[in-house]
Length: 535
Image (cartoon, rainbow, N blue to C red; front, top):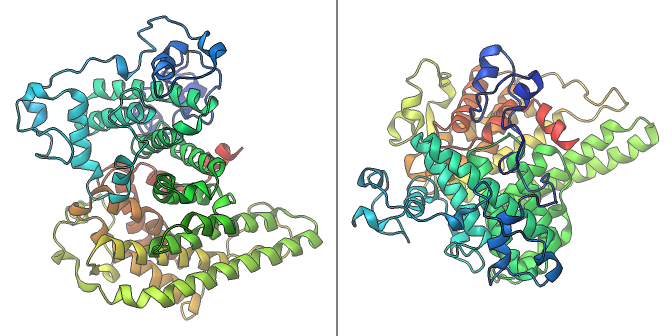
């Protein structure tokens, strides 16, 4: 674990086998060569981090800064004044000038950043990494950019948690994209230091620092999305965000600037609960209404359909409750609750579709996939190692904007997941914790048609999501619908289309179609690591 002396940084598999790990990310190459499944690296997130601050001098600058100074004099007396090199944070790093060759990597005139056309010595490394992030990550992700425009983020204050976490993210991202191992190691060290500061801030919570803490958690969550230490690292941070919002309450989340954080992070929290099959507090009525009471225009279309996705977390949890019951009377009771909640989700999804679906579909056009220039899939499919495109996906959709594509794909993804639950209902009697799946539906059945139609709708939107102009925003919003697309083809035994859909997700996870490493977990979906995390 970074920042903790004596802890091996090798993967879990190599540590259990007692062999030296090559520490390659996201998976160990030694495990792959030996035929083992790499279980990833030890989580380094604030949820499982030891609450006892061992490197007290690492949080000295945070605690003694004017913004974050503690009123607890007894705690202040325990802070060591030792200047340990291993525990220093980014505040002690002197800005360094960078060469003109490195500046050429960065787009000219990135918003809010020093113009790289000036002399190279005017830039320090922090500015260079910021410019690099604007060019290769933030562009096209309007929701995330909101985090840098609201009070409390304090990305320009070096003593703030948000700045430390942002610097760890930007440094590691630059090292990852440019292949610099030294910069990657520096980013990992900054990440460990930011975790120490965050751990201290959480154990000494002050309401005036809540915005700073939320911004820091978001940065660390993005770190785990892009360069994970383990496949469940981002889940830990997402659950931590949910815990913070739960403490704040729905009333405070309706006020600025907390509502902006809540708006940006809500989908991450929902995805974490979906993967772990956990009930979410966001499905409670007060969390579905109160945070938007002060907004005059009400909920957006994306927020309305996200409500249905939140309810799905509860449906999955109720499904598991039915399967676990051995006593028939209790099983029948939980079965009724499950069916009622499933009907609520279907009704809400149909209401959303009746209001918006026809209008959204009218805005798109159909064209051969070869005519959509700028898609990342265009060159990838020429490789023999990539799954072939099915004849059913030769014609694709072109949308007026990314929002329209996101809404329709999310709608079909939710519809597929609901249909899977209908197709695989809980058995009427106890047959074990993992009942066998249902046989595929007949080709002339409505369920087969539903799987085929929604799966193809998502598949035909893939090229548009992966346009170069959409950057990371397009691929991020594609991950969940694309996994549901693969599941739909799996249910009706369309192997060619299923391999193609999983191939798209794998390319996203490995970084060839933008870098979202968490997509790798969704592709595998073997449940092994997730169930271990839940225990």
